Amino acid sequence: MARLLATIGVLLVFGGCAAPSRTTQPLPPPLMETTVRRPVSPRPPPAPRPRTTPRPRPAPTRSLRGATIVVDAGHGGRDPGAIGVGPMHEKDVNLQVAQRVAELLNGWGATVRTTRDHDRFVSLDSRAAFAERCRADLFVSIHADAARRSSAAGATIYIARGANRDSQEAAQSIAAALSRAGIACRGIHGAGFRVLVGHSRPAVLIECGFLTNPREAWRLSTPSYQAHLAKALAEGIADHFAP
Ligand SMILES: [Zn+2]
Image 1 (cartoon, helix red, strand yellow):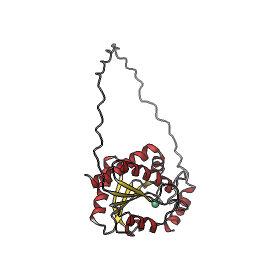
Image 2 (cartoon, rainbow, N blue to C red; image 1 turned 45 degrees about the vertical axis):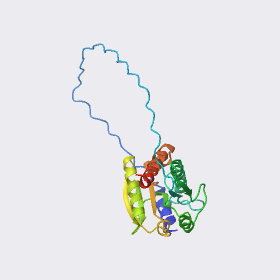
Image 3 (cartoon, rainbow, N blue to C red; image 1 turned 30 degrees about the horizontal axis):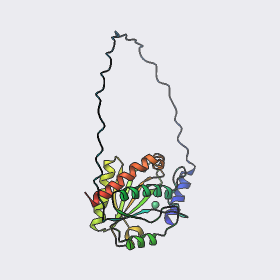
Image 4 (tube, helix red, strand yellow; image 1 turned 90 degrees about the horizontal axis):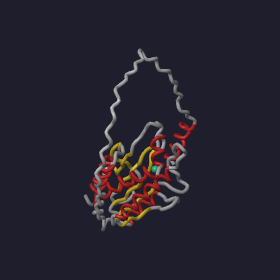
């Protein structure tokens, strides 16, 4: 509820904001106009490109066989999560990214379980209980952020305060993969979120970016960026299991 109120607060604060108007000042006239005429020499024709045969892509060598990973798309149903510019509902972005992550991990041989695969409400306690029931080797909760400052940007990784080594290492592995993919990460932080502390399994929660930042909201809504982000997250998770 606090999150929802905070979100509404954000909306009230940012709802009526208009972009600052810019004034364009004419450039001063050049001090001196010069025309330089260079002798024109005919260019040699471009050298023909050597023909190359496309290199075959290496076959994927990752194997996550034996690893059970729960992918949790945050919010859903009557709980939209953060509402950003657009207005974008966090629950939709979370599901789209989570499904892509789950698909990749599944393709690499992991046993992947998801807390939801469509727009439905799932309580935090049910999500935590599901992690326990699946005996998840890693519970990965996917979220998107909101802030009062529209300039706030970047992904953030959370683990439980005093988290076990598995959670810490998974978080570090994901942070490294985000960095390799050129996705700004605000670091790894401790938190008391129910989905992190309400069960005994290793767990990370990723805020994928800020929906209150117009640039990030736009990126997070595009399938190409979602794919790029999901690949980085999945690779980070996979590196944790099969470095
Ligand atoms: Zn959320």
